[in-house]
Length: 104
Image 1 (tube, rainbow, N blue to C red):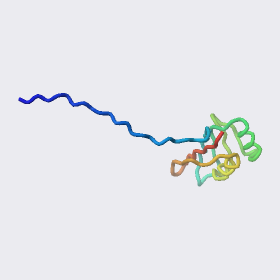
Image 2 (image 1 turned 30 degrees about the vertical axis):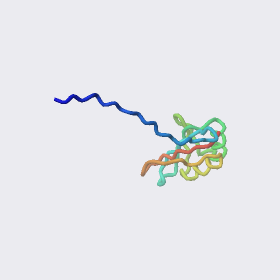
Image 3 (image 1 turned 60 degrees about the horizontal axis):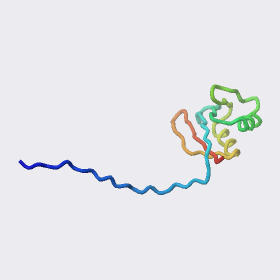
């Protein structure tokens, strides 16, 4: 009977390209439907909340962890883009969540 020695596993490191980012990002989420006329925004800081309050005035209510805005989600996304945010990704079908980021 032939004896076999235990196999030794060689670990070969794979170089990962350096992902150099110039800064740090902050993220917010916008939830809404393209078929509805209201949206929710999560993750805003106080200054951003104030800016949206000025823009949407009476059409805004505080909710748990965010704001409900009685405006179409695309209008809310456009308002956030004026604050420096850009859409990173989206998910959903009837109800969609858009993730947005801006550099800080």
